Image (cartoon, rainbow, N blue to C red):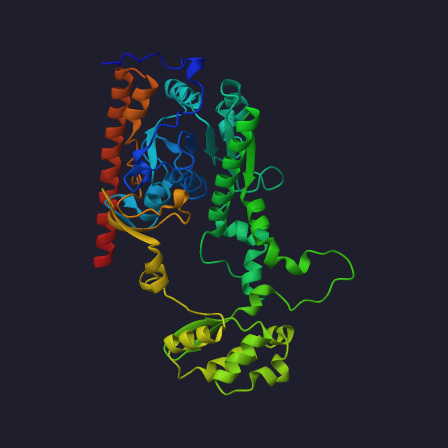
Length: 450
C-alpha cells in the first residue's frame, strides 16, 4: 500500500530539489559517546558505474559521509560482482569498492524506471558515470538533459580517452599504461605493465577530488557543472613529476640529470629475503660502507648519484655480496639506527603482521553478511580526529543487487504496487543468477577433479 508521501513517477516537487539535509548520521563512528558525521554528510551521489574507477570514486565519497545510491541494471548489476575471488556470490573487489553504498536496481531502458531515475536526479547533488562515450546521451541521460531538470547537479563522466581518435576504443587499465608510457618506464628495453590496475584507481581519486571541489564551487555559485574526466589525462598528470622529469624542460640549457628516477631504487638481497635501501645520497652510501667495512663510497664507479645510477647493476651486486649473510631484520635495525633509509620488502601476506601496519590499525577485520570474514584497508584520513575501527567501519557492507531499492524508492514516493513489481522481478533474476553461479562452480570443481 502506498504511503501518504506516494506520488506518481516523474513528479518530484521543485521544493524537494535541494541538497539532502545534514541530520546526524549514526553510521560514521562514535567519539566519546557522541555521533560523528563524515564531512560529506547531507550530500546525495548517484553512481552509474562498474568495475573500479567509478565505484572507487563513489566509495571515497561514501566513506566521507555522502549517501551514495548505486544504480545497477537488473539481472547482473555491476560486472565486478563476478570478477575475481568470491565467496557466496560476493566478489572481494566488489565488496571493497562498494562499501557504504545503497544498491537500487533500475532498468534505464524502460520508460517507467527511467522516470524513477529522473526523480532521483532531482534529489541528487552529484552523479558519477563511466559508460562508454555517448551511451547516456543517446538514452536522454547525458549532462544537458539532466542539468535541465537539476541545474545544481555536478555530473562527472569518466572515460578512457575522452574525445578524439581513440574515443570509441575499448579501454582497460593496461592499455592506458601502454599509451601513457608507463609500461615503457617500468621495463626499460623490455616494457612491462605495473602489476596493479593503477590508473583505474588514480582516476577514481581524481574523480572524487573533482566532485568535492565542484560541490565546493557550487556552494559559492549555486551552479552545478559537467566534469569530463579521462583515464589518460589522470595517468599523465599522476606520473609527470617523476616519470617525465627528464622530458619536462624543452630546448637547450637543461642540466643532465642522473637518468630516470625509478632507476635509483633497486631492491637488494639479504640472507633471508629482499630489502629496500636508498643509497642515493653520498652520506647514505658512506654510512653503509662504514657498517660493512667496505669502500663503496670511495669506489670511482659510485662516487656520485649519477655514477651510481649509471652503474646500478654493479652497485646491486656489491651490496648484495656485503649483506648476503645478514638477516633482513639486522639490516633494517642497523641502517635505521644510522639514519640510512631502509625497509623490509614484505610479501602480500606479511603486510598484515608488519609492526607499523598493526600499530596504525590500518587493516580492519570485519564480517560481510554474505562474503563472511574479510579484511579491508581503513580510510587513511581520520576526519574529526577519530580513526575508524572495526566497530564503526564500514557503516554498511557492499550491498546485494537491489538490496536498498524498496527503501529508497519508498522514500522517493514511488507507489507500493510498482515497488512490489520491481522487487519480484529482481528476486526472480537473483534466483537465476544464483543458479548460474552454482552451475559454474560445479563445472570448475569437476574440471579440477579431472
